Image 1: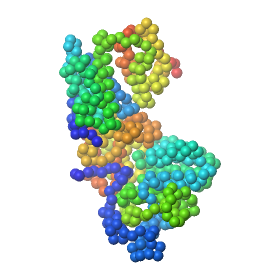
Image 2: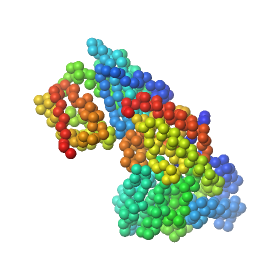
Image 3: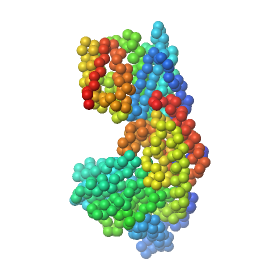
Image 4: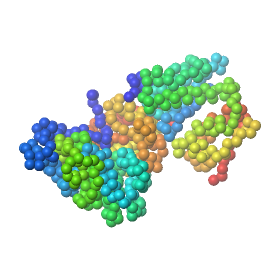
Length: 208
Length: 385
């Protein structure tokens, strides 16, 4: 059963909503799992302090409560401090979670970290990784095709990934009339378009 | 506990006070056991007669013979005894036909039989409303098929299957037909002779009877391998002591069941469906009208996750259930809703409300109000839509 604190946060979540023109944004989770959060950050460009954070959630009570408490815990902290937050800190702050719901606190941390990484990559703060195909593929595995509820690598949408002199070429099997085509392309850009070292992103399609 | 609006009657129901009186009587006054008393004492003599009477009452409700009624503990035991009992009694035929939307506990039995290595199961697809096609059953039957096992009414979406046509097929093709009627019994006409049913499963706790008592109706002449030993006669399919208070309570629940309650439930069902579908981005799972059981409502609210929905409702005293993965112990979405060709989020956002004769019109109004409120709130938080 849920703790009183989880119920309290579920009934009265803090920091719910969107930030217009956020400095960073990330969506984690998937429709298929029934667990999905979007995190919006406002970050002071000089001090790197998180001045504002908001979230939206599609998920169970634990999903809403963990994300809400996470936003409270990192607001006012620098991104370096925020990155040190662990899922255990969240479950502790909520007076524990049922074992089946621990993954919700992990999702809240993932969402935060991805948003911070997006910020760092865009502001030249991230150490450039040795860019290779497997890094790109692992990022693409976070893009979900809502139609089948699978990531686009597993779902066979990503047919080929190559990288040459910083130019990434993706070959996709994604029909023009695919219901979520635009969402998927947007997500791909969000996930890999800003990785340091990616100079160009070319997306090609297999003709059906 | 404070006031509760109980809308999970497909799971179990509240016992009727009249039934409770009978359970009490057979626990504290007529507490003998029938098996001990071939020539015996007064309590035993009375209970033997009463149990025969109970069998008659239940048999009459499904057009069966009293001696065809076998008392058991619950629907899970019924499934095991029916399926394994048939398969083990007919070891030369190894093929079973069922559908993808049966109760999970029944499907688990097929998986365990397959694991033994010699049994094969065909899992029939259903259409968008959850109907098994009688033609598909016919096509799936081979000379190895021993059993067709299907439910009459689906527990999640209320679809009423065309049992009579499938029963006719099974009879013609000489295949044993097992029907789980736990959700339909007394709500939809069940006639084992007319419908060609060989084995039928019914349970007391779905009709305001006591928990822990159910019955299989096994057609005269059909041989089942029994699953446990004990008791002298080898003819007894289900050895063990009779749950006499339960059995007598079961019969009482059947006797006092008023079919007018079905009409009332149908009105409340249609009210809920009409009102809830007025909320944007919703759809009904399962058929509407006469092909849906009178007490089942199952609606998907898009962009909303069912566990959060349920928790909110339960804080308001409303008890229901969902097909969401987040609510299941396996973290998998409802296999029933997925089998309709739906998306994952259709299962995650589904809410099942099942009615009983104890529900009231005011409760329905309050339920609609609370659901509107919570769906609105959760959609405000949701990044979707």
